[in-house]
Amino acid sequence: MLTRGLVFDIKEFAIHDGPGIRTTVFLKGCPLRCSWCHNPEGISPHPQTMRSPIGERTVGTWYTPEALAGILNGQADILRDAGGGVTFSGGEPLLQAAFVAETIDRLEDVHVVLDTSGCASEGAFRRVATRCDLVYYDLKIVAPDLHAQHTGRGNAPILRNLHVLGTLGVPYVIRIPLIPGVTDTDRNLADIAALVRRAPGLVRVDLLPYNQAAGGKYDAAGMAFAPTFDADRPVNINLSAFEREGLAVRVV
Image (tube, rainbow, N blue to C red; front, side, top):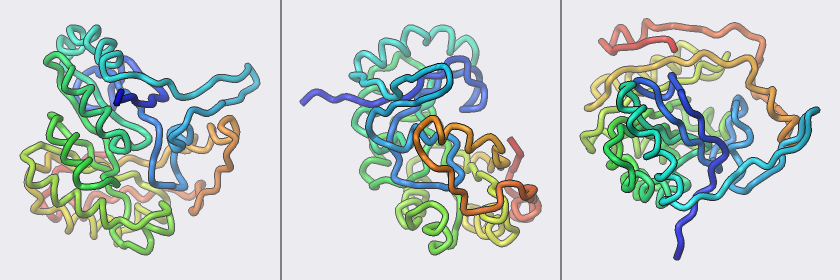
């Protein structure tokens, strides 16, 4: 059976999605429903129409692994010279694990980053993560009930795959979106710091302050922006919990 993947964007010259200058492939489909999501067009696993004052466009293009790898390999020399590579993001790229894995297998000596929520089966996670040079692993909320309240799902598979990640020998960065009154509380940050303080393979922790423009795409996607938090509240940027645990931490 022909493997295909649905991509909603290929962003060239990306500088925040891993080391150096990168090309980031955004894959469609996500099992979470984070109320702060800034890529709502990445949630649905199907092509969709985006409408704006300048017209309509279809978001979601099907690729075979050969076709996508061909595009990325055409940029490989430039990416290597810039100390960069390719990043697979989303949505949640692990929902299309077979496609991502087969694409990676066709890449020509290029650094690969997986940017994931970890919300996937262990098999899908292992299949892709073991093919990568670096993993960006999103951690949002440690308390299962609060995680379900704000993302639509519990965090059991995320915590399980975090443990698996520590056994794979693949370096990784924990990334925490700082959402006002939700993920940025002193309690949640302390819980995350305690969870990862002795995690093997951890490079550092990145804190990502909430993007105030996160709700801007929802109307165009025919979706309602319904945050479960006060979007106007200042973000609490507290590094102390991580510093106490001796963890490298930075604000991105």
